[in-house]
Image 1: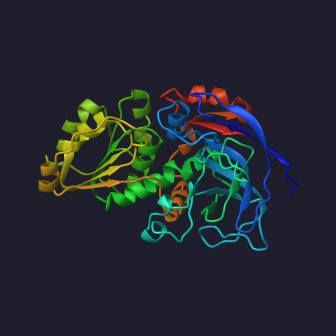
Image 2 (image 1 turned 45 degrees about the vertical axis):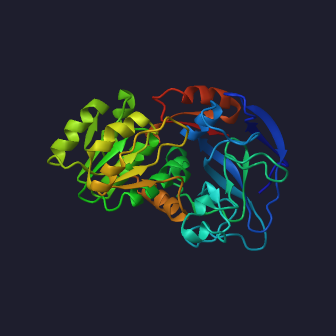
Amino acid sequence: MTVSNQSRAAVFSGEAGKLTFQAFPTPEPSKGQVLVRVLGTTLCGSDLHSLHGRRTVPTPTILGHEIVGEIVSIGGSAGPLDLTGAELHVGDRVTWSIVASCNECFFCHHDLPQKCERMIKYGHEPIRPNLALLGGLAEHCLLVAGTSIVKVPAELDLAVCCPASCATATIAAAVEAAGNVSDRTVVILGAGMLGLTAAALCRLRHSANVVVTELHEVRRQHAMTFGATHNVAPNELRAVVLELTNGRGADAVIECTGSPDAMENAWPLIRIGGRLVLVGSVFPSRPVPLLLEQTVRRNLTIVGVHNYAPRHLLLGVEFLAERKFPFESLVKRWFSLNEVSQAIEFASDPSALRIGVRL
């Protein structure tokens, strides 16, 4: 497959809301590396937080980490395998883990490869020599050694599979952290991409009640299509949960908003022995009061989930491949790479759960 020797990318240099186009030499992959042509990237909430200055990211950088690509070149005589153990070939349609890990450091050996001490994190790396094309808002992306790669079924639309490497895999990790959700009452805070994915996965795992609460009515309307048994405004949450559980409270709460108000609203509604899984707090916010005595007396478990391990990416792709829920409907609009500034502006609308960028 012929590959151009130059690749265009939209570069973020730190000025809020502004991207500039630059051309970079298209890298030749070395042993263990794979070069892909970017087919599509969806804009994650964390991309928007970075672009609008709500969180810091090393700059200059190429943002975008919810990516699907087509392999155009494989380094070395024998390329890496995908997570199922299958060989990878030029022309394969793939997605990959947000973090490439070394598999040798302390965190890699303690089931936290996403916190690898020598990580490369796609869509979050500063541009440097020979490692520029590491984000989705570009024509090509270089997959370095240690990247977990999954082939994407041909029948899956880009709108379905682009979020797999962030939102879907992260929620696979979050639901795992929530413990056994079968026949349980699960409360999900937020009806964005994370929350709706959590609702769908919990329903697929036979949760008795999946209660989604969301401030924005437009987002809340999606919940019933994605597995929720109850769809409520925040001020309705307490009455609904207590009625469903005979006053005991929810077995698990999965927090997908990052909102201190949402956390404080749901905190009293976790039953004795229940679990709180924190997922959405990926940008700085005000502190929330945590009653230690209540945490002890109620035997609560609090778990933070940031990114995921490779197994969660594979679970996420397999979940999407079942095509039980209309995830393609959540990408409101696609823009070309040349229109990336318009895409960012459009993505700021709370009703747009995802906006996509493709060549």
